[in-house]
Image 1 (cartoon, helix red, strand yellow):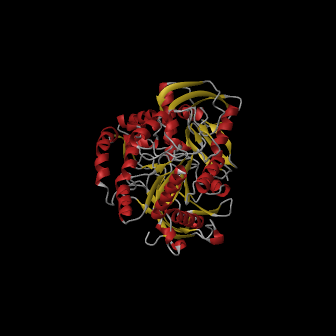
Image 2 (cartoon, rainbow over the protein chains, first blue to last red):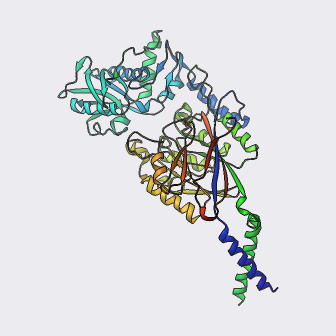
Image 3 (cartoon, each protein chain N blue to C red):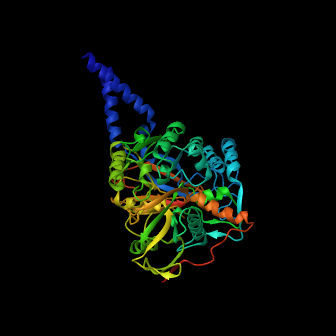
Length: 249
Length: 312
């Protein structure tokens, strides 16, 4: 067989076989999920790598900043954790920027831990609850826009609030009271909120065009400063004991 | 003549090399060849490098890169062909991120041998330039996303719309989709990033991977979220509205799936969606077996059987 015939033959074989050669197709899949736990053996390589970072983090974050007598819980439509954070915002805003601040909000998506357990609270825990470098904004909100904002909260599970109570019925806010008085849609209320929310984060754009005061104060620092007030008086951190958003259904 | 001869010689040699590299085509019953692939995945790890502290909270002791790395090594050492992937929100959630802007997160992923990731909304949290810098400096794995147009941003050369990995005799096409940024991420953080329709972009990309690049398997790393009460685009919608994707590894909604969800895609073929909560509390594992498509059944994976792995 000449070299050409051999080449021709092998090319022909390739073409024929190539035509038969199909892509692979998944036939079977088994799934499983492993729980990762510190009790299992860890990679020494990763442990050694992490150690210097861990040391720097511990230096700043392991400081105990306060004490909780019971666990703060994140839940919907409101929870002690969210309401505690809103209390911190309102208290610090009144003290530092505007004594007439009436209401404050902590958006539900921004609460990043399920709970802060009872006992000593480390600085790092507050970073985990509120990891974002969000800033405190203070703004005067007409009652009718406030009502729309509350409807948006009602339509999105709820959140943490202070100075305000309402019920949720069919994803709308009803029976709204501000410091005990029914909402007046023609009045104006001084609101404390985050740069994230007032700029349309969470898809409510009604606050975006209102005049607002940018404080430059990190909301996480508001929480830490609020906790420090109790600690400096040798008191446990105050746990909100009232339901502020309830379901009417 | 000289040229033609050279052409034939090179083509012939090329073909011979191809045949040598693919002994399977000489097997008498090539269709029975089974290929295996183990896919390991995480999502929404959110800077959880250390395990949760032992403070009595529900997650105490869970997660951590050291035990995760040990487990991944163990699975690799069992002799499996392993693919390790992440579906975004690598950043934000522990003081590590506040202090180091994501450096140890990306370094740890590189050390564990991650092979691709997509981008979550919180990966923008220290700015796009920061994400770009951390990836360029510390990651050898690609950031894969097909529906963010980064061409007018610093990310321009730090991401790919798809990535093909050859492993265990299979060509695995990987793409990724990200969630709408407006209203979720402050606009100063995402800058000139353009969000494109995920269904349209992923359909186009998956078609290219499966039909043009002849990938055996197409995976979409998604940060859209598994499903919503309203019609907001999600993994569920993507699964039903696309063709050519075999597996969606999701994130964003922090959902712990009991089992992968099965859907029929737009072409009536089976597609799976999985998600493993958040923080690296769980590592997902999918052990796939492949064989060549045959006869009339060309590329119909309708018969894909899904089972729970023994002993887990």
